[in-house]
Length: 97
Image 1 (cartoon, rainbow, N blue to C red):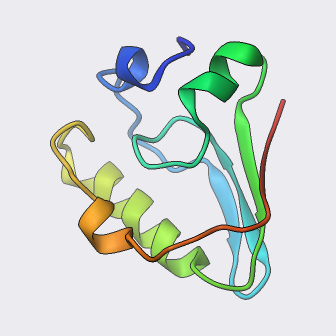
Image 2 (cartoon, rainbow, N blue to C red):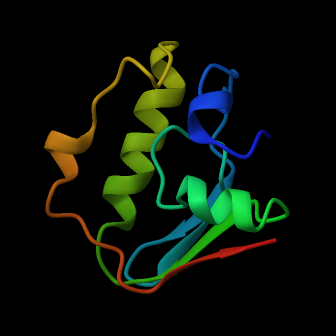
């Protein structure tokens, strides 16, 4: 994947690659238009491809957003999820190779 969200957003990603454990957290491959890894982090560490969070809240919401985007057949560049997740916070998120 290219090191910036803008460059890889048009690349089709028809699946959700991750594990979501309600009440515990998630690990997800960073190939979605919705995510927490910044372009700065991608550029500094191009070998990072996974996002990991140890959080009791928001896991089902994130899975739902990923599934909705994957099933819609619409590019994530058309979806503006921020109004739906303004208060969503993942305090223990980290990126991993």
